[in-house]
Length: 126
Image 1: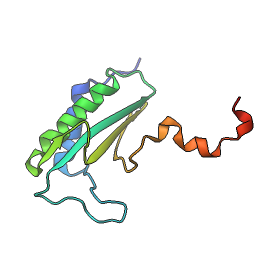
Image 2 (image 1 turned 90 degrees about the horizontal axis):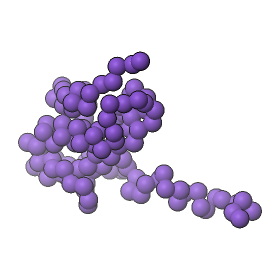
Image 3 (image 1 turned 30 degrees about the horizontal axis):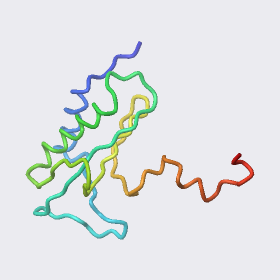
């Protein structure tokens, strides 16, 4: 059986990557213009989806640990966690043994199936 990584190790790893500059958050909009400077206060939230496992933690644990690491490192730049009406959504997708971090560009959750409705053949809906 594979060794399960404790959630505290995830916090320490993300914090270390942020401090080393290995991981950074791009605040550019779709046109490439930057939305932030060092004096701008930015709000963020972390959202997680998990695929595969087994893991020693659930998705809310990942959100909490990564959000805590980001808040601690980015606090001098004015970053604050905010669960609603935030500026940046950080995605933490866990796929098997990998954690992929990124910024979410789309506003609406594409997994809810709204994008399928336009293209669904009426014959298949009964």
